[in-house]
Image 1 (cartoon, rainbow, N blue to C red):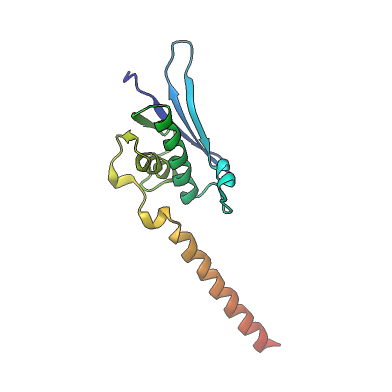
Image 2 (image 1 turned 180 degrees about the vertical axis):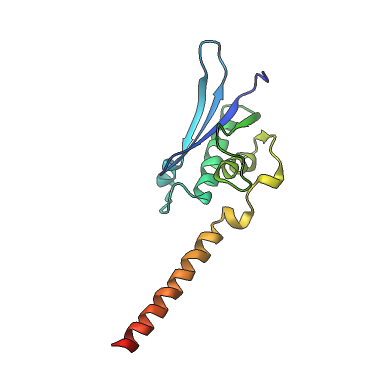
Length: 142
């Protein structure tokens, strides 16, 4: 009804896909597409389905949106539940940070710490210390 394009965000088990779709009477037209799989070309060596990858995917599609001259879009999260700080909102934050206007409450966007993956790094560090502790005890048991 708004006659404005919408950002469609979809998640699979491995990747995140973002598309800008425009309504047409004969069927929706896809104007721009970005997938987290494209991050490989930019040197990304980590998972393609996590929060940092979602944000970077949003940033990529946001740059493409700006190039085609679209200034404002609406978020279409489909049937995904609206969960504060989710990957869908990480994509939206990336699009907003690229300069595209989108009506999304700042309350639902993920924090900068989570976007940078600090929560993942902390989790991995916890297991590094677990591994070190394991090795110490293993040496004592021998």
